Image (cartoon, rainbow, N blue to C red; front, side):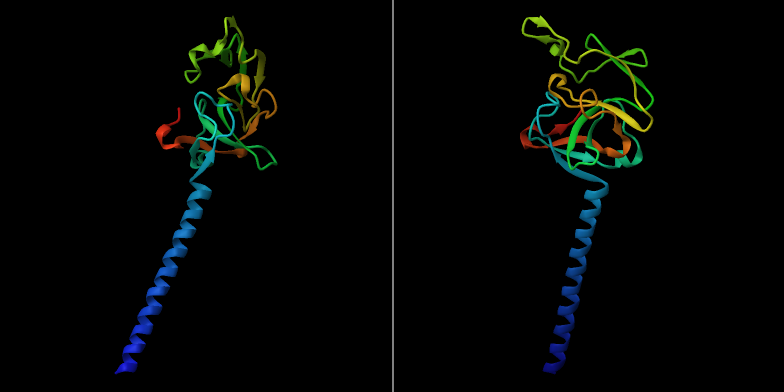
Amino acid sequence: MLERRRLRLRKLFKTEVGSWIISIAFAIVLAYLVKTFIISFFIVEGASMEPTLYNNEKVLVNKLAAYSGSVDRQDIVVIRDDGKDKYYIKRIIGLPGEKVEYKNDSLYINGKQKDEPYLPDEQGEVDLLKMNKTGDFDPLKVPNDHYFVMGDNRLNSRDSRNGLGYIDEDDIVGTCEYVILPFEYARKTD
């Protein structure tokens, strides 16, 4: 009788431990898949997206947007610098095939002026002088399968104008959806 009880306990223990191991392995695989293909977290580095995003804020990134091709103008995206382990957070300004131009701090897409509601009202003022913060440039045609990106802090941003060039759609990691840290500044990104 004692032997039978030991066998039952041993069988129960094996079943219980096996169940826990399977559950833990499943949770690890699921977490890996979610982080790889659905959502991820990135830390904002630098001031290039101020006043929308600030240095050291942690953002939640929707990777499905990049996989599904639903990235659109004014979206804030995480991009991978081609061939490097460096990531940037920028705003989509120009879509594939469009002509992007800036004149007097105004954005023109295919010759039509576009609003940029995410920029502060004083974007064009520095001290008492009016200064062109974006920098005028003639129309640039965005190649197919590429995007033109800029930081919201136009005077302090490495972007498509000055170093990053056009961004290949395969280098877009996802769209920034929420600031999650620090908690007191948690919000949806615009």
